[in-house]
Length: 117
Image (tube, rainbow, N blue to C red; front, side, top):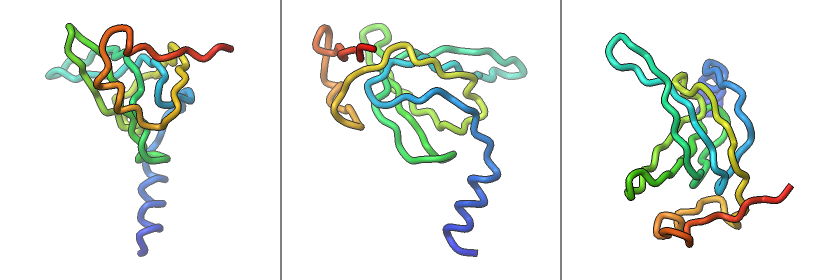
């Protein structure tokens, strides 16, 4: 069994939910399931997408938000069974696929221009 056949097998076995298209610079709200003991609850994480990595079921995306004056980043696998829904709040205009420079910006400089429809 070759490497490509193995990758194909894994991709076919993982079910990926359909989510809206988004890219770096977009502001999204990710609703995901948290298990605490025997209980489950939904939590929302709203922030700016810094990057998308990979394709297919192995893809991930990084979301950054400011919580209590501290930057918080979270990496979500797109095929995670804990992802409930993704809502695109704003479509941003940025010129690169990975906006790591955004980490160093504070206040008004940390605004991303919104795409006009």
